[in-house]
Image 1 (cartoon, rainbow, N blue to C red):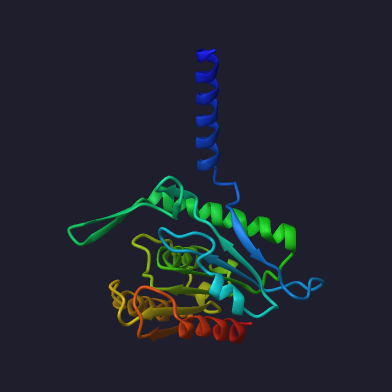
Image 2 (cartoon, helix red, strand yellow; image 1 turned 135 degrees about the vertical axis):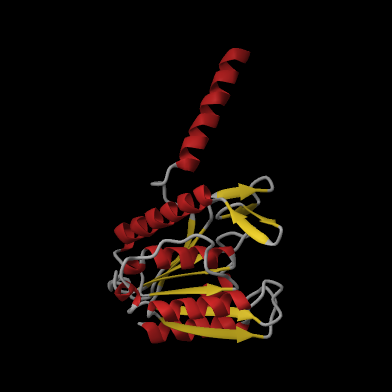
Amino acid sequence: MKRILSSLLVLIIVFCVLFATSNNVPLQYKLKMHKDVGEKPPVLFLLHGYGSNKNQFNDVIDIIDDRFLVVSIEAPYGFMLGFLNRWYEFNIIDGDTASNQTQIEHSKQRILSTIDTINKQYNYDISNVFIGGFSQGGIMAFNLGLSHPEYFAGIFAHSARIPIKYTLRNSEDDYKDLNVLILHGTEDSFSKKWSIQAKVFFDRLGANAEYFEDSIGHEMSKKTITKIYSWLNSSL
């Protein structure tokens, strides 16, 4: 009996590992339907910050225009007994950030798989796809926008920075139609210089980039949420 239970436990562990490392498996998500169900909706994908979950954007979801299909995605890597989630592990060594690039790539592919799954299920308007995130989720949004600009009409990143490693397209023409909103708090311990540098970076790529700040720490505020709302509407 003990041998059977041990074998079953091993099989369960193997299954869980294979499931967790598969790039084609969609991630868990929270969805808010658009108002006009008969129409192809614009869609907004949201990526939470380190140590949070798909409920982080409840305040954002509540005010987003009803024309939008809104999908808040949960990161694949749990920690602290699964109560917290992250897109990748990172360490700060001598002031420099070292990130787990394997996990970043895995998370990117899982996000893209989720985007594809949502399109198959809800048939959204592929010319109006937006993605945004907070902190580590914002870094992931930057990463996806840089490597796959053709997927998105716009990206936003709140309290984030350009990824340490990223992939650029061969032609800057690929970014000329990309709308980018970069938000940061002036009191954030994660310096706003990173967001200012991101604005300069996207300007050089020829994207339509905008920077907005509020007198807050490492958090979202009513002002920044309202800015996201107005930016989305103006980008349609």
